[in-house]
Structures are given as structure tokens and as C-alpha cells.
Amino acid sequence: MSLADGGGPAWVRASAPAKINLHLGVGPVRYDGFHPLATVYQAVGLLDEVTVAPAADWTVTVAGDERLALSDVPEDGTNIAVRAARLLAEHAGLDEPVSVRIDKGIPVAGGMAGGSADAAATLVACDALWQLGTPREELMLLAAELGSDVPFALVGGTAVGTGRGEVVVPAMVRGDYWWVVTGAAQGLSTPQVYGEFDVIAEGLGVGEPEIPDELMEALRAHDLEKLALSLHNDLEPAAIRLRPELSDVLATGIDETALGALVSGSGPSCLFLCSGREHAHQVAQSLRLAKAGDPVTVARGPVPGARVERFG
Ligand SMILES: C[C@@](CO)(OP(=O)(O)O)[C@H](O)COP(=O)(O)OP(=O)(O)OC[C@H]1O[C@@H](n2ccc(N)nc2=O)[C@H](O)[C@@H]1O
Ligand SMILES: Nc1ncnc2c1ncn2[C@@H]1O[C@H](COP(=O)(O)OP(=O)(O)O)[C@@H](O)[C@H]1O
Image (cartoon, rainbow, N blue to C red; front, side, top):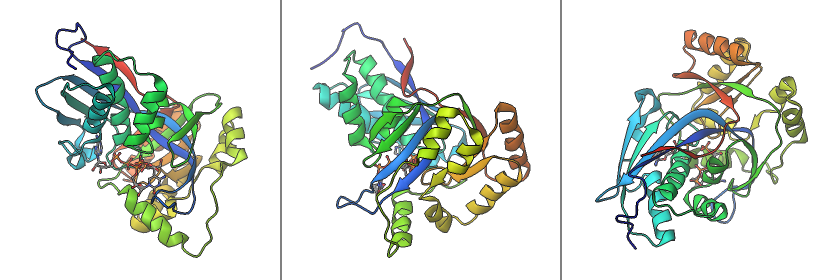
């Protein structure tokens, strides 16, 4: 099928947010190589933008701040944004190549699901470009095919994730949360961090992961002290084994008055919970002066999932 002269937009731009895991509970590795998760995701205001337009061939280009490790993003068909566009085209029975331009605001291989954000943004952008009106449940299934974190990038907000992370249920949360996010010059590979988790877990008798009640209570009540005590990441010891300096970064944030600190997902980005906007900027400045991570950014959550921003 072809859409030539169908009167649709000439291009569509969509954005999608980075995610953090307020709780990341990891169980023993499954038969398929994935780990069962019980996680609480929050989408925060670090965004990638994806612009798609009809083209003679499938192409992708990447732009943004060099400190985000852009050179690690493939500019070929292995880019998850191109895979997302092709998957939706195939699902709709279309043969309509697009050019994809990614403007990165999310650190690459940082444990903040930047690739997943690009995939989710590409799904909604191509859906609009091709005027498909794909039902939400179908987009969620395509998202899960692309990666465990991609469905959450479509949903956004704050949500509980189970299965391998792809089963996403929005959570009741009150108010805004202010975070400082530190980046690192070099990313960490997600499969390698899960592999290190397996090494640490061997012989420990790791059980099925669960969502702690205290965390959900803290989010419902917007109780920041309780939230700080409930933050937890089962992958943190593995990330620190692979990148020992992360423990200094976390300790510096606490010394500089952050309410709580943890590694973001598979790392190496680190997260610092603050009491509000002003406190977050203060902690960020102290971390910059202490040279604990680069770049150091302030981000607010929760924010919405992938959505179309503009078209022309
Ligand atoms: C760890 C988390 C926490 O939210 O995110 P990041 O911090 O990396 O962004 C996720 O589980 C990452 O999800 P995502 O990056 O989408 O992973 P996928 O593409 O589905 O899988 C990549 C690889 O990670 C491992 N993997 C992923 C998910 C899971 N539940 N168990 C796993 O063991 C597997 O080795 C898999 O081959
Ligand atoms: N559009 C994309 N953006 C980022 N990384 C991508 C993209 N497409 C493929 N990748 C590959 O996926 C890996 C993981 O990237 P990313 O999603 O940023 O990190 P994480 O899994 O730590 O959240 C990168 O190292 C890169 O090789």
C-alpha cells in the first residue's frame, strides 16, 4: 500500500521522556534470559525529540549535546527508532520509508531508557504521519516487541511495571518530584549489568520481586522523607561493581543535602531526590563544583509519555 498524495502531513515531530525507577526489584533470570521485575517507573522531564518525514529510503541522524555520548547511537537500521518505524509500517501493511531525525536530551546507555523513548516517540510520530489511528493496545504490543521499557515510554507518568517491565499499570501519585540527574562520560551496557546481577545473586536465593507498600504510600501522600527511605534499586550493586566511582557520586549527593540517592536503572546515571525546585538547583550546583558526574541536570517528574508536538 502507498500513501502518495494522501493529503497527510509532510513531517511529524514527537517527544518522549526519560524514565527513572523509584524501585527496581529484580528476580532470578527466566528461561528466556530476561529477569522478572517489580518496578515503579517515573517519567521525568529529560526529553528526546524525533522528527519523521517521507523519504526514498530508511535513514536516521542523531543530534544533541556531545556529553550525552551520541557517538554510541547507531545511524543505521539497528537504531531502535528505525526498527520502530519499520515495525509499525509492517503492522499496517505499508511500504513507506521515512527519514528519522533524533534530537537527544537523554543520556545514551545511561539507565534512563533513551532508546526506548526514541522508539515510543517514533511509533506515535509515524502513526500520525501515516494517519493510521492505531489503537492504543496495538501500539503497546508493538512497543513491547521493541524492548521491555518501551511500553512505559508510551504511557509516561508514574506506573508499576511487571513481567520483564513491559506490563505497565499507571499509579496514583500526588504532586511533583524534583530530581538531580548526573551523567557519565561512558555508558553501561544493560545486559552486562544484568549479567553482573546474576553473578552477585548466585547462591543468595533471590526471590520473586515485589513492590514495597511504603513506596506507594509515600507517593500517594507526597511524603518526601518516606519516599527517600523507600528508594531502592536491585541493580545498583551490579552497576557499582562495574563502575566503582558511582558510590562516591552517590555519597557526594547525600553530603550535599539530597534527601535520597540511587543509581538510575542499569546506570551509570545517578538520581538525587530533592525537596523542591530550588533545593534541586542548589544540589545540582554543589555536584557540579564537586565534579560528581557530568552533565548534572535538574528534572521534574512525573511528565506525560510519548506525544506528537508539531507537524507541518
Ligand atoms: C534496566 C532497565 C530498568 O528499567 O532499564 P535501563 O535502566 O537499562 O534503561 C530495563 O529493565 C531494561 O529494559 P530495556 O533496555 O528495554 O531492555 P531490553 O531491550 O528488553 O533487553 C535488553 C537486555 O537486557 C536484559 N534484560 C532486560 C529486561 C529484563 N527484565 N531482564 C533482562 O535481563 C536482557 O539481557 C536483554 O537481552
Ligand atoms: N535511538 C537510540 N538511542 C540510544 N541508543 C540506541 C538507540 N538505538 C539503539 N541504541 C543502542 O542501545 C544502547 C542502549 O541505549 P539507551 O536506551 O540509551 O540506554 P539504557 O538501556 O541504559 O537506558 C546504546 O548503547 C546503543 O548502542
